[in-house]
Amino acid sequence: LTLVGYHAPHFISDFVSAWFLVAEAGNPIVMEWSRCFNAVMEGRAHDAGVHQHPLFAGLDLHEYHSHKQLDPGFNSATWADYLVVNVSLKAVLERDPALRARFWASSLLMAEG
Image (cartoon, rainbow, N blue to C red):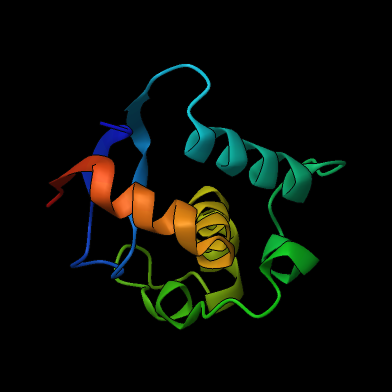
């Protein structure tokens, strides 16, 4: 197995919760995910506006912007910023089809919710 974690398709179709993940040291998916997240957050003290980072350019974030059921007070930009670690994984998987195929084929993702 590549990675063990929780998948929440009822929330966002390709959403993988980041609160609990298990992977072997040096896992290429987790390494790339970490590189993307660290690049996006470099020099930032908070996540405000992070969804506008160039690494996220061209990503379809409509599901991230439309899910406000957990906190109706969040505006769409705030919600995508709050989920920056999840958006980072989406960016990695959308930009590398081979990594995406490996991720979905070799990860054990338990249904959340």
